Length: 161
Image (cartoon, rainbow, N blue to C red):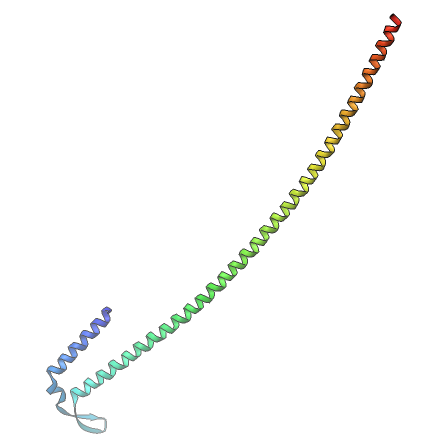
């Protein structure tokens, strides 16, 4: 129970105790003027009745304000939930778009790397075949040079011989 409710309850108990202690004065008829008409009514009961009506009216007003604030709160919660869902959907959409962009970039890099590897392989094959050709040419040149030297040596031996 809140502090305000406790204070209101204590005030009601005090008012009830006051009315019970002075019940005879509250119920004593008094001549009252209601504008044009004069009546004999108990003034205390009339005032208690007016206090009770005021209390009921204020209680009803408090309930209405509380119910209205609860309805506003529920409406705001629904709006926040809708906004949260839209934000989550937007985030998911952006993440999917980012993922596809990154994937496309990786695919492009992979294709570029594959092309470079192919070019490097072709270049290595070309260099290997060129080296083999040079080795074969060098072997042929060396064999020809050796044959020429042998021929000269043989010729020199025959002349000197």
